Image (cartoon, rainbow, N blue to C red):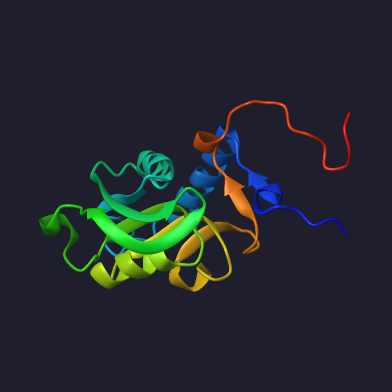
Length: 167
């Protein structure tokens, strides 16, 4: 067996796939809010949660959209999660009726921090890894813990050397 660098066990998500998966997330969330099935607002966890939050809010016709900015990564190194921008306090309360959306739950450190702030919110991610999965209420696709997900905003088209040898 050939040892691979972490980025070589990658799951490459292109714009069309992300759009389909975020719409599938919206379908799964449709009618599940606490107010006769409706959600009061969508809060995207920046930066990765912005695109899926926008797609979910569009599909579910939720016009109140806010963000929470949590920094837990520097390149591919995870650090302690830190809130750098909070959503509107009067909107959030304890999170009741709020749908919090992110692209991925990895170890769960980001969602753990946000869940402490808004314990009654509903947490939804497009992708989930096993360590973080218990912190998510709704997700679409599970990937292994050692898989690195490359999102469309992370990629550029360029030549890649084959795994074995040269051309």
